[in-house]
Length: 318
Image (tube, rainbow, N blue to C red):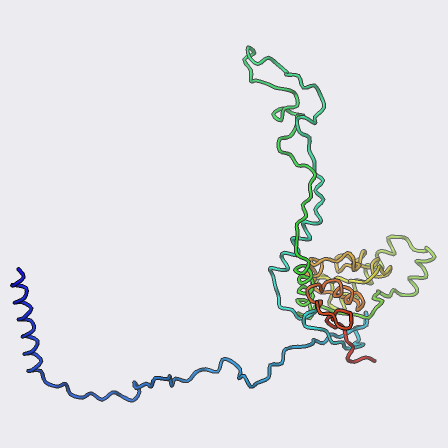
């Protein structure tokens, strides 16, 4: 067997030597220049990145116009940080904040009695056998009418936890969303709805019925909001003030279908997203940003104080 394999190998080697002697050289084939390529690529590369020599200038401030109400005449122009009013939209963070607020406001006071809390005797109602009917325990059994409830609700706390920095970021994200869409109107301090002097004089003397006063205020406030295109046809309006203003809050209670008024301490992230636009006075906006910038306050102390991000620097004023 070994000799047969050796002879086959020798015959194959002789065949290869004969084939190499009788073969002719192949003609030279010219390669087109379009197919030639050097070691380094020569294909043009699209300019999708900026040059390293170009200076990158990020957005350092955004303008904010301060208006007078209800004339909406521009009064001043302020410069705010993009981290306050120009953040990108984050639906996930807004959802976390709204769910956190909803869970926190649930009362959790629902309560039902178990079979051990229902009043009455706990004696067995009938014999175990011999009656031909089903076995019956005490009258407090959940199977009987008037008995206890199995696995019923008990008072509990529905509130959940959310990182404070995430919650503060949700506040500024909601304000930035309104600012980008042009739905954030900032007014001067002392935001209030001026009512006619004649009406105020009659109302102070109690010469008008309550229904007449409410009807006039409802119509007056509705006409002002309709003229500004802030009524229910355009999604209603939320007014936010630092403290309660009698004329504004009374008018919005009467014309609740067109808008509402809230104090700063009663505002949540959900309130910033519900209606068509926000009308906030300048001091309320400053306090809102000041209370919700925990993730922006620097940990570096300069001259014994932390270096916060500036907010509301006046650029143009009358």
